[in-house]
Amino acid sequence: MAEHVRVLLTEEEVDKRIQEIGDQISKDYAGKQIHLICVLKGGSFFMCELAKRITVPVSLDFMSVSSYGKDTKSSGVVKIVKDLDESIRDKDVLVVEDIVDSGRTLSYLMEMLRDRGPKSLRLCTLLDKPDRRVIDVNVNYTGFAIPDKFVVGYGLDYDQKYRNLPYIGIVEFD
Ligand code: IMP
Ligand code: MG
Image 1 (spheres, rainbow, N blue to C red):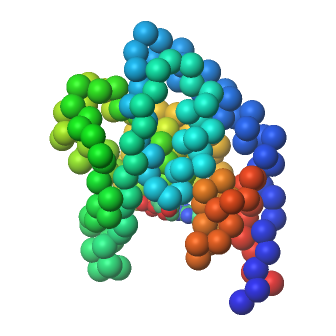
Image 2: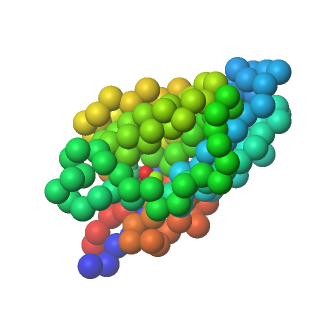
Image 3: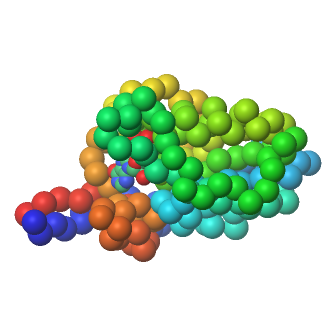
């Protein structure tokens, strides 16, 4: 099926909002060091842009997760495909995600990370689809709340395509 992408948020709008979030985070973490955790692959573009705009010291780590098969997805169990390189014990950890949809992935991930004993643990997402939430997730920083549409760009993919778009677009089928 052929598809096309309609712009939802322009590059300028996204960049401006990331600057605002970066300013807010820099204020909130004044005097501290932030350990940013990027959830691959979708969160990578957002994390790089955000990290550049944070003015307190930052360290980075990456993790990759995937949902188990359809049957167990509803239980919110996710598989760690790539775990963190470093311990997060006693660190001020900020998880950076592309989008919170049902909330299943993030609620599982945040609970697992909390068990590892960080000093603090917060969540920052570029996009949020609140209408789709199945499991409650405490989101500390949100770029944009968006309608229940399938979006791509800025790290988000459709069938591994469109991650490199510098804007957020809605996928529409012809
Ligand atoms: P959740 O566990 O349902 O919150 O799923 C979150 C994950 O689903 C995100 O990290 C994305 O990888 C993917 N996802 C959810 N909505 C979209 C979308 O609109 N476009 C691309 N990926 C999405
Ligand atoms: Mg993701």
